[in-house]
Length: 408
Image 1 (cartoon, rainbow, N blue to C red):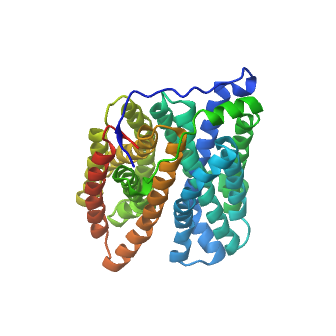
Image 2: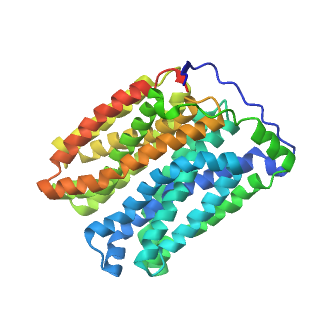
Image 3: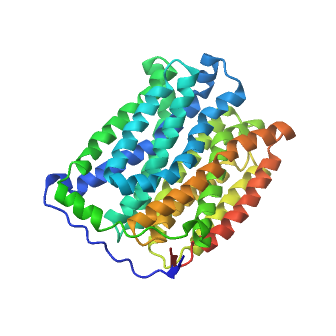
C-alpha cells in the first residue's frame, strides 16, 4: 500500500438540496446528541457497580466485568462497521446504532444476571459502530474542518461521561434504585435518534449525491501499513492507560491514605480537565503540518502524571490529576484526529477507524483487569504504575510515527 505526503485538504463536493432537513444546524445538533451517548452509559454504571454487586450477589471479579465487557466488545464490533456503512450508508448505520444502544441500556437493567451482561455486550457493539462511523462522517461532511469537528464531538463525548458519572447517584435516589438510574439513559439515546432522523429522511436525490461523492476506494493492505499500526498503537495504549486509571485511580489515592471523598473529587477534577484537552488538542492538530511534537507531548504528560502518582500520590494528587486530565483528553482527541488527518476520504477514515479502534479497545480492555491482578499479586500499586510509565514511552514512539505528514 502507498503512504503519501499530506497535501492541502481537498473539499469533497457534496451536493445538498435546499431543504430544512439538510440544514447544517440539524446535522451539528445530531452529531452533538449522538456524541453525548457514546460514553454516558459507560460512565453512569461505574458508581452503581457496588449496588449491582449486592443485588445479584456477584463476586468482585465478576462485577468488574460490568465495565470491562463493553470495552472488549467495542474492539470486537469495530471491524464490522466499514462494511455496514458501505452497504447501508453512514446515516442509517448511526441511527440504527443509537437505537440499539438505547435497547442495550434497557436490557442491562432487567432483573437478571444474563440480561445484565447481554446488555453490556449490546452496548459495547453499538458504541463500536458509532466510534468508527463518526470519524468517516465528519471527514465527509466537514473535509476542511475535520480536526476541529473531531475536537468538538470528542469533547461532547467526555461531557456526556462527566454528566453521567456525576448524576448517577442523584438519579438513583430520585428514581428509587440503580436500575431506574441506569435505565434513564435510554431516553438520551431516544432523543439522539429523533435528532438524527432528519439526516436519514433527506431526499433520495441528496442521499445519492452525498453517498456518491465521498466514498473513495478502500485502503489496500491497511493491516500491513506501519502508519496504520502506529495510529492504532497510539490509540490502544493511550486508551489502556485511561481505562486503567478510570477504574483504579480513586482506589490508588485512598490506599495511600487520602480520604475517599477527596479521592473522588480528585478523580472528578481529572475528568473535567479531560474536556479541555479533548477540545484543544485536535484543534491544534488541525493547524499543524505534522503532529509529532503534539503526540509526544501527550505521552510525556501521561508519564509525568503517572510519576506524580508514584512519587507523591497524596500531596501531589491534584497536580497529577490536572496533568493526566490534559494528557488523557488530548490523547483521545488526537487519536480520533489522526483518523481523519491520515486518510483522504470518508471510506478510508471509516476503514482506519475500524482497524485502530478494534486494536485500541481490545488492548484497553486488558488494563483494568491486569492492574487489579497485579495489585492482588503484589499488595500495592507501584508495579502497575511503573508499567504504565513504560507504556507511556511506547505511546511516544507510536505517536511520533503517527504524527508524520503522511496519508494512507
